Image (cartoon, rainbow, N blue to C red; front, side, top):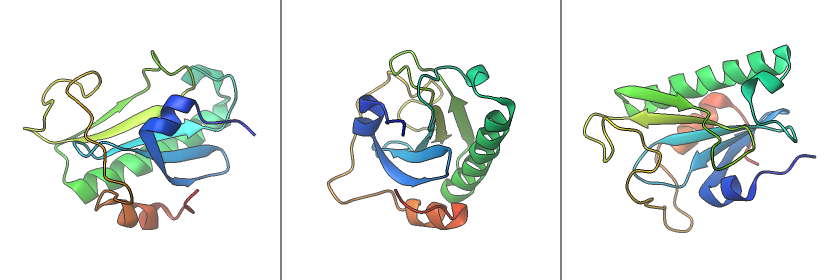
Amino acid sequence: MPELHFRLSADTRALGETTSCWIRWMNDQRFPWLVLVPKRDGIREWYELDHEEQHELLDLMNRCALHLQTLTGADKINIGALGNLVPQLHIHIVARHEGDPCWPGPVWGNGSVQPYAAGQQPAWLPTLRDRLSYRCA
């Protein structure tokens, strides 16, 4: 079984999972933010996934983005797979609002993370979990 990179494990919390992907939320109160991580060792780039895995991940990414935007009223959804600091392939889905702390710039590398207190979670999380219908890991 593949393992989640230590940095992703430290920065995110479990929302749920599919047979092929972990669904995580970023522990940063500034932004509604999801991270999708394929359960594959040694995969760094999207094109390294086979055709079926790419389409399954794309479908999940689209579902997550749609529900995140609906639940948060986001003005824009940012989707990215940077991987410059974390070599394990992972996809960021960030709900953005005009006037948020980094608007209109990128969230990466801007400002300081504001983690949730122990035991707290975003208000939108339970509804998103229900809409995606995935068990919590």
